[in-house]
Length: 306
Image 1 (cartoon, rainbow, N blue to C red):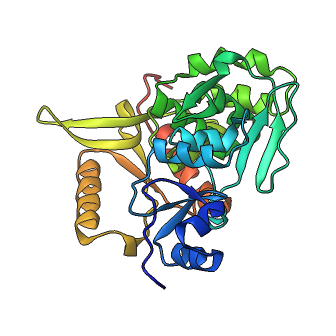
Image 2 (tube, rainbow, N blue to C red; image 1 turned 180 degrees about the vertical axis):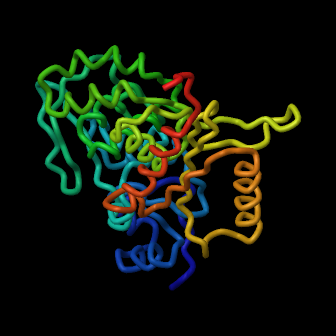
């Protein structure tokens, strides 16, 4: 392939001729890792670091004028990626809405809707109109599958300083809307301290099991210095639940040694350490660690005499 100078900004497939490319060459560049899809129809060279501005500029290239990016597209612009790996392979589809009185887009690869939005539900990021993080979190609480919805709400809350109380203010507006029952439940559980999608899933499983909720991101202080941070912990019972999603072959020897030393220290100092891995969210694997956690909680000290 001849040497091609790609722009230092997002570009569309419609610009290929201007850039001296054809579609076959573009597919080659994507396959070789030189170019990545940001959303369907918009690309960027991989030399450009991912950022909110880059995402917004890419969306701005392919969204219809006068429409608003919503749901997962809005979350992507705000720095929270809720698309699956398979969707990224094809290029995430755009999710947009037209305000009342306008027609939804019929463009291929765009999930166009009509939605009632108030002026305060809309913000502008790098030139693209998009629902605010607050409104986006509420919409995703209705539209996504339950655990993905909860993870997205926590991530938006963490990234944009939202709280469960902030989100609860908007639930009444969703009355009778599809998904509002799920939204109402999840809003009460939102915690911006949760740092990853799978930690959100773990916390939701603990809630569903009827167990008390642990504290996210608890620091253990050693000799006056915050030394070990625990994903989810019951401090006074000395029980922690750790999500470990990395396969053994993905961790460096240093990471393995650190994890082993850290957990050994915790156990030596009276902590029960329960490790949850990527396949532990369904069936017997899920039941195993929930039983372990339930038993640990029930064996804690009680003030009752009988």
